[in-house]
Image (spheres, rainbow, N blue to C red):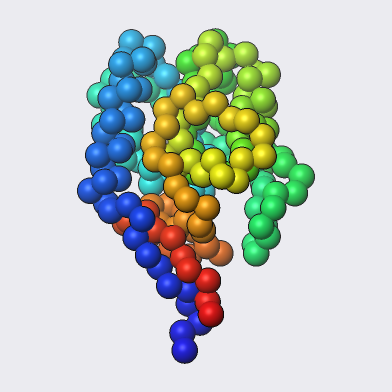
Length: 177
């Protein structure tokens, strides 16, 4: 009997690419002449962010933040705090926050409030995977990707205990029986 959970594909790499292309087209329409700052949330967004920015053919800058929420093996976020702060000033800048997945909304609501206090010219949210069934606080997603079921999602940057980030498809894991 295997001690690893079963991994099942939810969205293929081709479907991921089509979704990213659509999201990039929407961002291009809105930010082509604005030199936006795209802020990736570490660690999960790095693959999505990298695919996204390669589809954007205009000047932009990239920075990263990391916030604490889920600890190893925990299922609910504890006290939220910024672990890795921005290097770029955002006052007066057009900012697009790029995230891999939103479920409860607690972390993103915290981060958007934190960034909003720094007075950007605009602040928008781009999320690849939305899990609305788990939402505890409202979050406005300006550039949505796909809606996912209430399963533990892995692959395409998302992990389970730091495993499975490298899977090229968006997948989910079935519990070990």
